[in-house]
Structures are given as C-alpha cells and as structure tokens.
Amino acid sequence: MESFTPPTASERLFNKFFGFLVRLGLGLSHNFLLEVRGRKTGWLYSTPVDVLVLDGRRYLVAPRGSTSWVRNALANGTVVLKKGRWREEWLVRALSANEKPAVCGAQSLPRSLQARGAALLPGAGGRSRGRVRTARRSVPGLRVVIQAIRTR
Image (cartoon, rainbow, N blue to C red; front, top):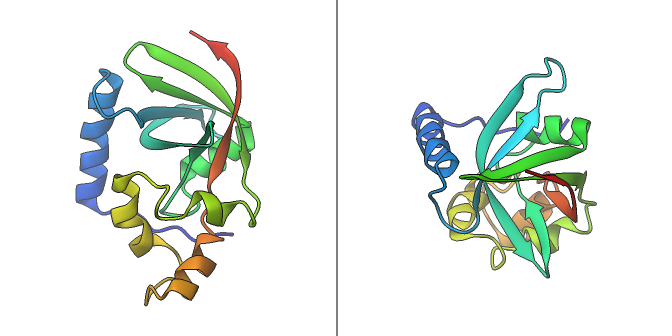
C-alpha cells in the first residue's frame, strides 16, 4: 500500500471552504470539485482538486499519496469533475511508474501543487533531486481519459 500524508485540521477546514467556492463556480481555471462514489459505502464524496492539462490530456495528481479519493476513483473507474453548473464524468486509470515523472515534474504542476508537492512526496525528506525524482514515481497520479462518458 502506498503512503498517505493526512491533512492538518486547518487544511481540512480550508478544503471545505474552497470546495464550497468551487461548487459555486468560483476558482481558477484548473480548480474543480471531484465527486466519486465510495468503494465500500456507495456514498458520494467530493473534494476540491487541481486538474493538470498537459499535451491536451487531463491529469489528477494526489501529492498527499494514496488518498481516499484516489482509491475510490481507481475502484470505480470514473470520477465527476464539477465547477458551478458544469459537470462531466470521466474515465480514469492509474499512471505507470514511467509516466509519473513527466506529469509530476515541478514545471508542469499548478503553483498550488508546486508549493506543497515536494514537501508531501513520500521519501523526499531531504529533497535532493535524486530523492525527489524517486519519490515522484510513488505519487498516485490519475490520468483522466479524454473521452467523456456523460455530460449534464
């Protein structure tokens, strides 16, 4: 099982507030509300995420590691990205270890992920380039397949 860095109480509070703003349609162009069904309960969970667009493909990167939304998304195979009234369902697949370094490179991440990404990478304690590159291979990024299943 991959590692997970839990958020602090203040980060959880900020995520709830920011998720509310994104639900209203506010936020930058890469901010969305991700909805996914729980793999055990079937309940609908939502969390704010940054969507990375690289070479015309959409990616979701989880700098905290194997979070609940990552495990739920992989189990279901689909997620819903929302912003205001816009809502679209996407297929997802886990990136291979060889694909992750290209996507998780600091130059391609949104600034909100750059600041906390290196600090949250498992095994990158000293943050030397070699350790960060090795740690990036363990980050569970999800590539969102371009084909939309359903749009509402």
